[in-house]
Image (cartoon, rainbow, N blue to C red; front, side, top):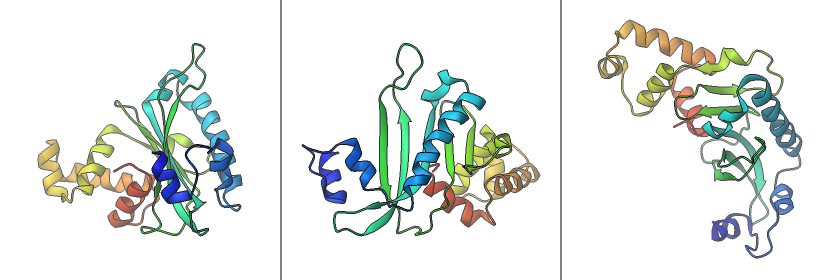
Length: 196
């Protein structure tokens, strides 16, 4: 990990600080990152039991400065690994992946990817008040994964033991919930969000 921080951002692994990482965020994206973290705290407090915090991967994008001084779009993924005795934050794993080869456009949206059977919440805006509309069911997540593997409606229906009509209905709901115009955009968004 330390070598990656140097290779990508030019940070010295011996002297890097949290402020160093914050300082690498593009000045136009820092406000979004701060608001995103506050939004996530509120979202968990209001919509998901705090004890389930360990069952979610958080994902959003921002631009960050590279070793050469240029900025690139980065997908930030965070997974809480531990909590303290009173349910506060503990250790977390943060993964930053350069994704400017997929897109240079930041959607300024947040996704919470449910693990261990928990529902996922995709493409949340900081001003979203109706979060339950974006929740994907387990079946929808299964279909998204199979679409990502290149399966068509008939193959998905066969694999999941459901009718083709049911697959089509799920696909329509998935596109609506994800604000995607078509399956290609859906798959691209799911890759950008770390869903697949």
